Length: 616
Image 1: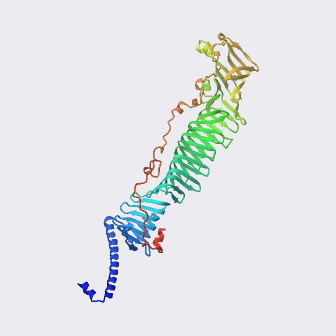
Image 2 (image 1 turned 90 degrees about the vertical axis):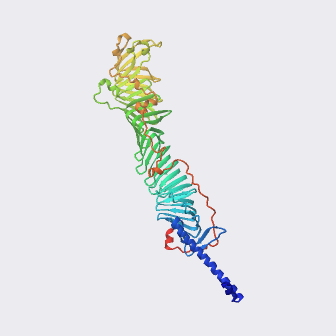
Image 3 (image 1 turned 45 degrees about the vertical axis):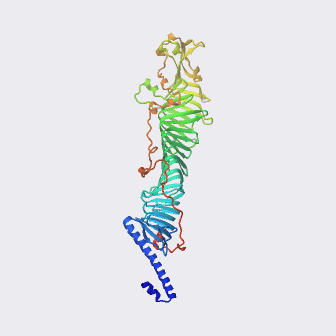
């Protein structure tokens, strides 16, 4: 009745004007009441259910047709701001679904978690229930150690992880890293890169199929085919570690290092650029690309600045002689010297083998510059005289045994063929006579052809020993047989020089010179104890007939250490978190809807306050 009375007591045009004014007032009042209710209810919800809180709403609007159940906030004199359990979010326009506890932020979005994690993008969808944020378009994630840029990023606050499934670039104080996929563990400053990973640094480049990288320590852990390329080195591995600050690293699977003029292979390899040092463990191979030499063993050390390589544990050096190879083995091998001046040293139980010549001694010294290979032995003290030959250096040419105090093998530097042989002091040649062991029934009469003297000089033709001269105090015992393999006698004599020729690695003929004394004795005129010279010592059981004979029983029973990290994580920074070698799938999530817009948003961007400038 009051309304009717109030209206009927005014003229018609005044009544209409009055109703319109009241209607506008009521509409404005309704909007402000809704805004107050939204802000108030969100605050209450935030207190009770830890929901997203509106810090600054700016201009408020609603559009139930486009955004049913959502409140629309756009910037006024400053950006819209929201807060949720330790994070703050600023943007130009926000679509806020209060019941879903979800917000879609558009335009100049800035996301901050504490003082360390900051993120810029053009769009962010944040779910307050799951605490997952999805950022898109020009995404830049920063903390105190690095900056990540990509086009789409998922940030999970529950696990404190950020994930991207598109090309991304990470920059820290030292390196620039790129990959097609990656995951960032924020609590430990670790990146887990997947697919086409690359680190670019002024001093090196790293490429890897998959990598873990710590922005704090600058340590990189590589999985799958990976290369580290520096100014004067290159490492390949399929599991490895690299300290990008010190330029030190190692590989533990299918590893190779190209180090100047040497290529190093091994189950496990380590190198240090600063000291120019590399080491290898298990199944190692060092290739000399200049001289085509190869070193093998199960442990090696390479000193680049000193042009030095040390190999041990079943160590062997392989050198090419025309169409044949020479194998040198010792407990420890060292190769030193510059190009064309290499020196091979073998220590303790040194042995060598090629198809027509082999030998052993306590140590071997082979110089590329002089072409001389020395077999050297130090006789232990208090060894009986008759046992000394058991310790002397020894050579075998076929079935012919040669011993002496020191043995030199000389190669022609131009032809790279073995040229000559010298045995210094106490030279002694022994060859088992093959027919006497068959013809004589008495086993004690097994014959040995022998030549001894002060020194021995041998000449090679086409890498085969052909002529041998025994000089000074030369003596000979030689079994003679006719063409029908009938025993003729035993030639025993002394002279100043004996020359021996060999055919097919057997003694073919002997000739004596200078003061020759001796006879040919029938079998019954030369007693058994007169058929061997003083110092005779047959070492046929030591003969090296193949490269496999180079190795002792201890070498063959060598137990190799287990290389850690081949089947287990190698991540020393955080081993429990190092992932398995498998594809890490992106967690299932609801695909975000297309970017939403509203005509209510203003076109101008307000000036930044001092706090907002800090976001950038």
